[in-house]
Image 1: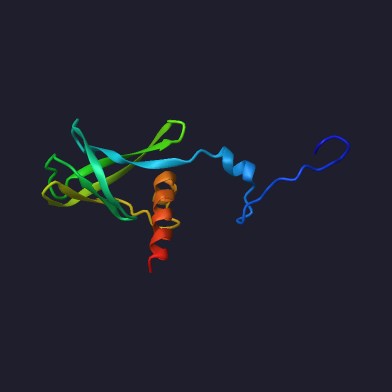
Image 2: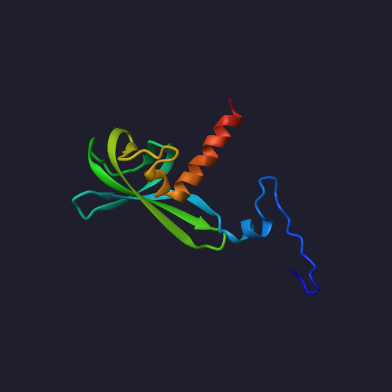
Length: 137
């Protein structure tokens, strides 16, 4: 309200979200670099993100991880103002071919799952990918 009982209009987008609210929430972009820690050890490697899905990731890695090896993946996100956030998921190595390594999440990021709720930034990235996939069908 602005003095004398006059109500100030607030713009809304097509989804009904107030523009001013939407602009306050920082947006994060998934970076292509991920950190991979080997379970039971002190080794941490970095990899390049090739592909991500609700069930796992494909990484470009020079380190020879072994099939079925347990790892923790740290995904990195960055906002426009340079602030970084991380999300961590447990996974296991499922395959390796040359410098490419496939990792399967211990708990898939299926819609509505606790795992997906625990990784909101990665889930948002997957949501965008899923919507884009629908456009190409």
